Image (cartoon, rainbow, N blue to C red; front, side, top):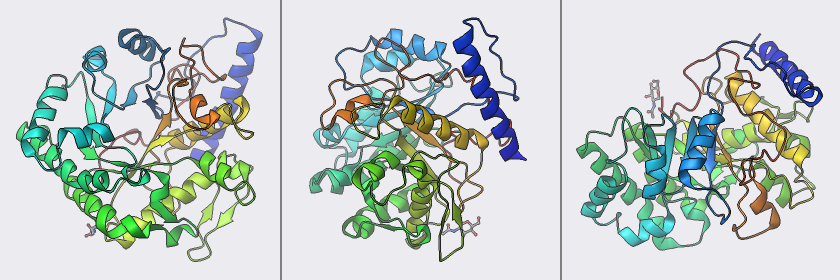
Length: 382
Ligand SMILES: *[C@@H]1O[C@H](CO)[C@@H](O)[C@H](O)[C@H]1NC(C)=O
């Protein structure tokens, strides 16, 4: 039934998008029921051509984007989001994590919370989570890695002292390479050199505090790294892609993202954490810079992801846990280092023009069938 509703919505969506090409004044309204939040969006800032924070927040409000991941807590940005009722994940960068000494010095953690969170956090500036570092096990810095979990505990302690521990979760987004075994998903395992000394203490902390496990997952990277063995349609989450069956459990996988998510759930379960909730703290597909990166593919991936999320269903291993994800990224980022595709993950150009033709105005063209109202991007753990 749910599948039919979302198929219907997808069909309506396609009709509406085609209608928009034909006439500039097509009626936009939500057809499929109450509109729910779609995925969150990551606001990567590695660009020298983006607008100022106030203008960007006004743009987000026009687009009705209500859930944003920030990579810093710079005062101008925090001030721009103040009172705007946009759910925020805010981050402590890897550099700041080491610079501030939060891991070994509780006073530094308290100061950080006092400076960066307390002036802003409120019902109308909902800070949902603080993430400590980003992909700390992916950068080859043992000092950084060893500071992460102690820093998370100190930040949590400071939040608790401020009476905010039940409103603001604390987590750390791992990189995709934290997953060593991903097939079959039920055999999922974290990378051996980090599993017991780093991931386990983080999982313990997350379970104690009811916070989600966060991983940045890019099926694009899986495809890019191994185009011979990774099916493009499975990576693009296309419904017509091949089906894979986990030969140990019999679970049927219709796309690569669900496989990766379940391998993370299986890996966590093996470490004694069967009840953890996973949030994709980043995911996305670039629109150029690689042979598999095109406007068509980027639009497909984003739309398929939205459909998965608003469909409200989970994955074969966790059917009751809806997929929660943040799309990377809001804008193309011209200053990002690395391959060309890195600079082309944006849904929008810096001048606010959409990169590809998808409407992101939740209440307009993307329809959100009303099932599981409480599911989307609710960071609470089970
Ligand atoms: C997981 O949740 C179930 C059901 O609430 C509970 O019985 C079990 O003890 C939990 N397991 C752990 C390891 O927390």
